[in-house]
Image (cartoon, rainbow over all chains, first blue to last red; front, side, top):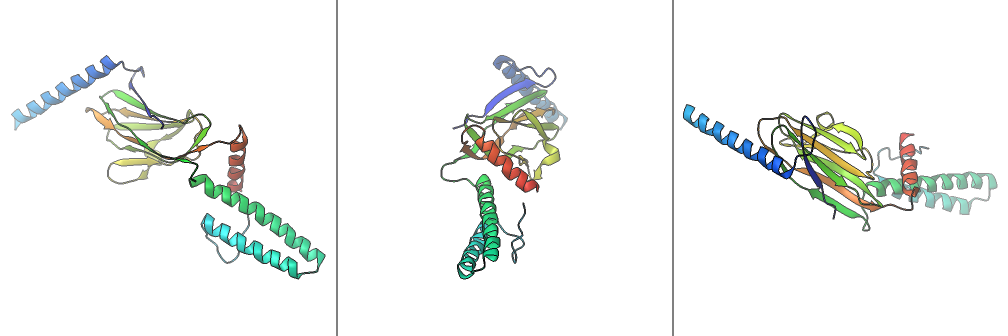
Length: 44
Length: 194
């Protein structure tokens, strides 16, 4: 069984993200999207 | 070397093999019936030529069609990628094996870029070589067998997090003694180029 390797990198620096950095980015994005959703709701 | 087989212009490899066998039987029968040494020599030369062609056709057929000794590959995975990040998917080919890759596939997203490296060589920027699968997927057919690894780099330039799902399909074949496999493969490549 061949295991497909996965590495997440920063687009600009091409440095590999640590687990913490990766999770932080995802969390930030999640909050950003939730905020945008909320704002969108207010507009309508 | 290129042999036109009369009567059947476009044939599948299996049709060709069957037709070659028929021709060989006919030629051998003719030799048995003939007493003319010169004609027989010509027929023998033709038989040798056809046998060589048959062997190459057989190898060409096996190259893209797995046998019971090969290991089928239908591998996929997924990764959630935040904006301004890229994911590197690496399919490593085990030592002593060659990956006869039928397809490399990945979901196609707006504002994302894709690159493929085969055996560490840049091979494709996906949008330029994809076969349009419609809907949501892009597919790339590698031009050769893979001996080290296949890598997809997907860059998320959008404002949203994206889940990338790559797929690698084909089969793994054990290579013969060092150098032998590549030598045979090259022979077929040369033959096809001719």
